[in-house]
Amino acid sequence: MTVVVDGRRLETVRHGGAQPGIVMLHEGLGSIGLWRDLPQQLAARTGHAVVAYSRYGYGRSEVLHDGREPDYMHHEGEVVLPALLAQLGIARPILFGHSDGASIALIYAGTFPDAVHALVLEAPHVFVEDLSVRSIAAAKDAYAATDLRAKLARWHDDADATFRGWNDIWLDPRFRDWNIEAYAANVTCPVLLIQGDADEYGTTAQLDAISARVANAERLLVSGAGHSVHRDAPGVVLDRVVAFVRAVTR
Image 1: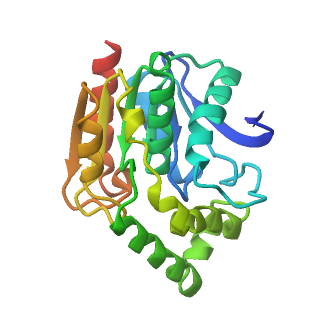
Image 2 (image 1 turned 135 degrees about the horizontal axis):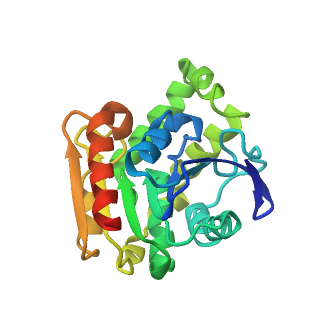
């Protein structure tokens, strides 16, 4: 289904039908399609509705027309996501975010703590690490020299705009001071933190920063997994998320 939120056309998909819903927020180069079959599996295993959407500039949503600003994730968490949830009639969801999507989910939960049932945060960012900047700079080189552009073009209507929108802002010197640790301090719901110990975009310092500020947080660190833990270790992630959802909705 296509909806218009904050003046932008967004693609959405829904699996299952029971509430509370699970809403999935993709990573910085992700989309509905790049979740593969994880939303369907979550709906089947938990019995809850699972909604995924592609943010503005991603997937089959409206193509990015301009560059992003350092507060783009704040805008997504404080303006776009609440409007989308209201339009879809979803109250107190479980938010499952990956990378940028995890940061956006955390911003939403820190802004509207009573509006979230639980959080699943996979490879979240709450501040900018040198490792992140180095890897994102390497991705820029790979986009120019490898088949990365062709791979992204399978999932996004305008791969160039999608890539630049993510890559340019993370490498912008203004972005080095970006920090959302204060939002974590306002989160009151249960949180599951997931990260691979071979994550090329962040270290467990991100999880430590969140755990230090959230009273009810547990973590899953997956050996050998990189930034996309749900793709590197799908069975491990699915089993743990299903168990977490059952526990918080029992």
